Length: 396
Image (tube, rainbow, N blue to C red; front, side, top):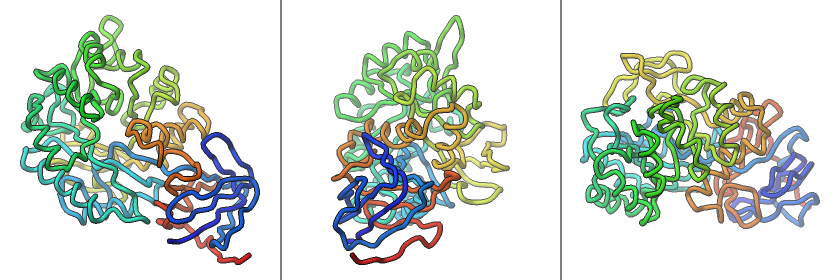
């Protein structure tokens, strides 16, 4: 395996910030982090003192990128996503499905399971599992999910999909107020799958009941859910009020106004928010017409919409979400890292190998320059992206 020694930049390690630090990558893992150089014959990467070395970003909610979509149900689609995402600092992700016919969802989850078994290569963003977004949603809050395929929560159907997925469905977005919703929520909790309330029209009392049943996350806070009202706090009020619920947020300034991102941050803190993209296949491409779950989407500028103007996923990059969150909330880079790396890893139960910079963990590393642009990304120790030629080999 490749060996690299990053030097000179500020390293945002798990418990400390190391100025002009050293980070050694060996055998796909972080071998050393510290203020002095370790003995090594690794390829040296001389960074600027203004650069920042961070843990790789983890996107729990992404449908597609660069013309590819998880619902294409092809290895090529997942390979495309895995190869392009490191350019934005994303080193791992959940392949996220859409509401579709049962047979289409089955094909998609089988494909992800097959990809994870044979094609999850170092040097590309790692597929960590599946985020099943739908079809167990509220028709009233369908958003860009096709209403004709929305169905009531169904434990047996979920079991079938989970079997086809080889147990890789890690997160399910559902409307727990729908018939059998609480039963499915409880089953998800029992089997170690994250239950996330989303595309839900639940009132506060129903959300509270769902949290007691096992909901621990909210899907794209403010979008596709009953909003905050002073006489009925709704889904938004409930998830903001309950500390045990982590909230995804799309910080593109379009899905959620900057002021509301700041409002969420002031309520939940960096411990309670997860930066996501909810990106669709048009990300990394130009303006034009695209498909999303069988519906036509138009991309103009930074916005993707259905014919009726409904927002339809995003074309957001996670590196930009991090920059935006810092701008909108005035939070520190450490807090932004928590929202983009640590919290997603904690939710998935993989903090032992991802989510922070610590010896022994996977060498999922992103380097930002002074302008907060990604200049280097490593995925499990392999160089996945380099914006400029910064590598030079030196022997000691």
